[in-house]
Image (cartoon, rainbow, N blue to C red; front, side):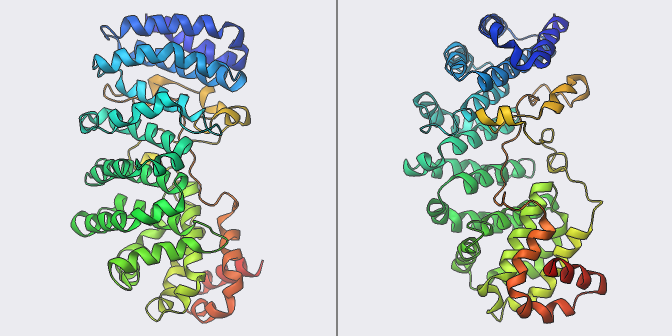
Amino acid sequence: NEYLMKTVMRIVLATRTNILPLAPAALAKLAAILAEVSKNPSNPRFNHFMFEAIGALARFSCAAEGAALAQFEATLFPIFQGILQGDVVEFMPYLFQILAQLLSMHQGGTGLPEAYVSLLPPLLQPALWSAQGNIPALVRLLQSFLQVGGAQLAASGQLGPVLGVFQRLIASRTNDHHGFNLLLAITQFAPPAALKQYLKPILTLCLTRLQASRTTKFTRNFVHYAASVMCIGAQSGAGVDVFFDAMDSIQPNLMATLLSNVLLEAVPKVIGRVERKTTVVGFGLMVASPRFQSAPAYAPLTTAVLDQLATMLMDTAVKETKSQADASAAPASSEDAAAAAAASAVAADEDLDSLEVEASEYQASYAKLATLGDIKIDPCPQIVNPAAGLGQILRPVQAQISAAVQQLSADKRQFITSIVSN
């Protein structure tokens, strides 16, 4: 009865951490139902409400009681193993999302638990990735692996196979944004030295795709990724040098050509609040870097870069939801503090209050759990206001860029001058 299961979901969502005294009994019952219906899944809506209830119960229980996480894993893992071995395709995307939620709750611990380490190689097998419905959930799960154990994966040589998944995803116009979501997690959570090792082949793959099959979506995602790399070590500007070194190793001054012909026009088209802030900061750091200002190939582009950054910052009507534009899952929103203490990958409380599965874009192949939010990837969290951040970045080089600023249109010249002066 899908209505009864929806009621269970609503009760968990409404009671939140007050469910804690009943959580063990509720988990046992939900696990028993899951084990039974996995033998013959027949009602997609019932199944969705069931997994939402499990996800919500895990979220609130584990946030309030540290020992609850081990209980959830001990109860659910045997059932999940049966689902994987039985190849219950209807439940695969849900299973990967719940695993991602539980794994993210280990953030701040001693690294990846052994149970998850042994799970990683099977997750990278091409057969799982051939099912379109698995892809968003698998990417989300790999992001959790990187979030909890990025350094561990790098040390054990697992980044290479993960990047193999990225290579597969960006070859597809349908899935390339999922590839960038995975790549951003690698950039955020893997050690910079490990990223530097792989950056040239990553950029070569992206440039090949830009040349062979460029789309607006791919270009704006690449712009955001380039900015994310340039934000590494924002105070020192190390990310700019890392990015330019990789580009120059492919072809000297390649970035100048790419900026002029491809990237600059796409800068204002980047979508998403954090994504736009990252783009402003990353390209601002690029303009302010000695490497950019001292190079004859790059310095003349200062006006063009500032023009596009001003266009982005002055345009307040741009849609701020990246995931909708990428035909991805529902947008993420800010986390509540209690859940963030246990895991950074959760939806905001207000989203759960208004959760209506009927209103969501339910698909038989993949339905995102509303109780599982996107992992927040922000390479420059110290900057809240992108305009103020850009002004702070440009202030030390305002004398060097003054001639370029004077070449801007009057409104943009006034805007740049104002943020640098404040």
